[in-house]
Image 1 (cartoon, each protein chain N blue to C red):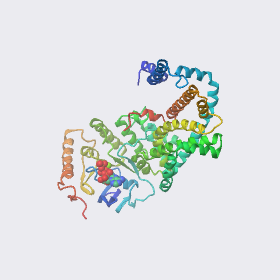
Image 2: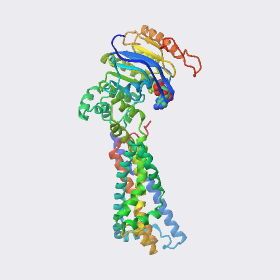
Image 3: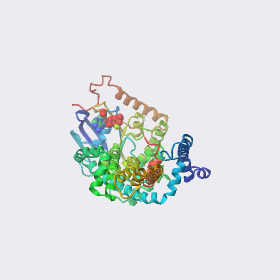
Image 4: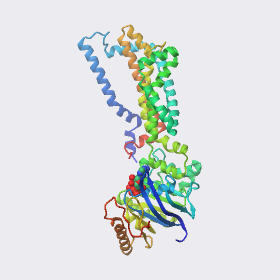
Length: 265
Length: 268
Ligand SMILES: Nc1ncnc2c1ncn2[C@@H]1O[C@H](COP(=O)(O)OP(=O)(O)OP(=O)(O)O)[C@@H](O)[C@H]1O
Ligand SMILES: [Mg+2]
């Protein structure tokens, strides 16, 4: 793997006896965009908890830039599954939250965030409360709050999961454009296979709980994607592969599916 | 954005009037029914005076009512302030320490089972006829609702918010200030509205148990002199006081936490 920035190496985790992650390995390089897809309850959000320090792996290693991840410096900017905006903070103050926690004064933080409102389609709404915003706008605020933290890797947990199809589509196009411009390193958790194919360099398909990597799919399509018929056709072929991997375990729920491409015990 | 015309139609004072109008009409109807009953049944005014009579007597005795209202107001506010301060400090302590919570909560709950009729005379016995026993009794009846409101408010903090702050590296104290404390505000204000009504009743009851001045003792004296009209006049004054304090809590919420109003109906 050329210059892997983050590596999860055979990581296992359980919630008081309930095994959630089992020998899970994945790798992301600098400026890569990877997605994690998997059934609901598989343990996708749990992976982010391990990375943000809310939980600790029982077995396996997490390496950041070659070193064991510890409680020291923070490398991740996390966007929770729901937007988690604070209803009592105006939009601008929600956006600056991470910077304030980092120790910047409110004024400094605002100065740093303000130029980005235009790009995030939020200009003019700085002084509104979150309740006055549409779902798509709230999601953009949450994303803005995430990227301004200036961390190495963005962890996005189903950022568009709660949006209607049309808005979601627009947000995906927007995120693609933003990524092409900024080249963030992103781990995206999503249920939306099409979204994963559109945005990612590589897709990790997880098995049902306890999650392990069922399949790794590289997406070599040129960007921007899904603009022409040819790239849409290739994308839908990849989507088919992912759906096969997601649905292939026809055994009953109790039995742990062993899928091709997963790590071996 | 609303047009200029709709702004004019909905000026704050006008909107307020429209909001309270149904309540005003309902109260007026009650008074009218009461008045009609007194007129038609021929009931003796010493047993049940008509509202017109009560109003007239209240006006005639306005100096006495006013002089007795002020001590009650003072006791209510001082007691309430004490209770708020204690509830806040203890709610924070209990939020940070599980052991403290387990140790103290049973005591708080027991404090709520103490019957006022028994406790009020005792507190007067221990602390005299001055302001102190009233402050303590008001604090006693309002402390628990405020504490529960705060503690439940902290607990209502969205899990995602705490995870988010944790991912940013916020300390426990920071998380409390940034997420848990503001999350508790809607609960806090709901508790405030309930507790402020208890506070007035508590103050009057404390005065009733023994006092030199105050609405409670005014009511007791009026009763002993068979002046049902003055009892009712004092009751009306205390009701108005409670309403005003209730309104003040709404105003306070608007000023301190305007987002609660703005998010009403839009909460997930
Ligand atoms: N705090 C917790 N305590 C105990 N069990 C938990 C906890 N959080 C999650 N779990 C369990 O761990 C499993 C994985 O949860 P996780 O949130 O990672 O799933 P997910 O893949 O993100 O699902 P979804 O796509 O629905 O968000 C679930 O079965 C859940 O029941
Ligand atoms: Mg999840």
